Image 1: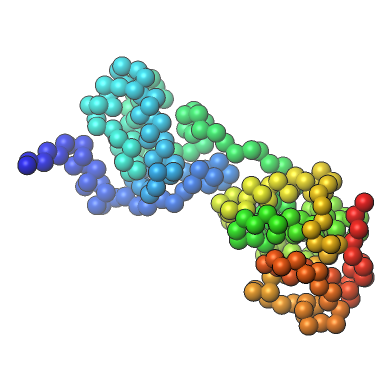
Image 2: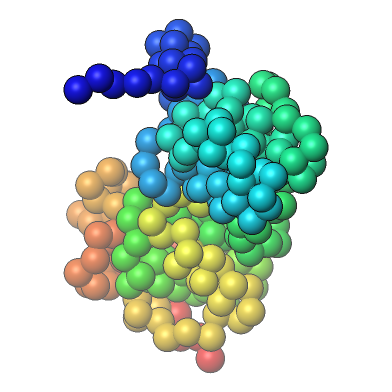
Length: 270
């Protein structure tokens, strides 16, 4: 059987061999950090921005007879490779079939918005700080663990008369922030890529709860300290006479370092 390769397909094969690089940019990278998928990049997966943008472009271009003909004539498909044909398709979409764009063209927030992709919820700076803190502490979404860490923050807020943000940014307390003194919150968010963590949505939930008064039950029984024993056991942790454990059976050890003046007794929030 004879296989016929169109000129456009041949162009893609040649370009793929010589110019294309892989992009791991996600939708969240684009929305939160203004990153872009660029010409001569390809992406894997049916949930990648490039693939879904190509599919949406085809849907939109097929609504207009003129641009639908262009799709057919150019054999424009969602092939997960961002070459000249995708760039031209973006131009056809933006100009209602009057103009083709040439590389370099990028897929960024502006195009996603125009194509109707939904952006994430806008967060305040304080919500970002607390959500980032919780994702720094968690590598996966275990709500009981996140709730317990949120209770540590809430208990410190209550007993020390501080704000939740002041608690987590206090020097040498939440170690994830040690390397980010003076760094803007959006820079931290993009460097940590907290929004890609499995715990991000749960972290946002508890960040909002902390900022609205921490009206949730205390599953730590009044603990004020915690640490991850698989990472490090601090000098004040298990084995130290001052450590009082609040056994929870979670990833972290929760309790109180009673050498700390405000951790002598379990916290009982009203």
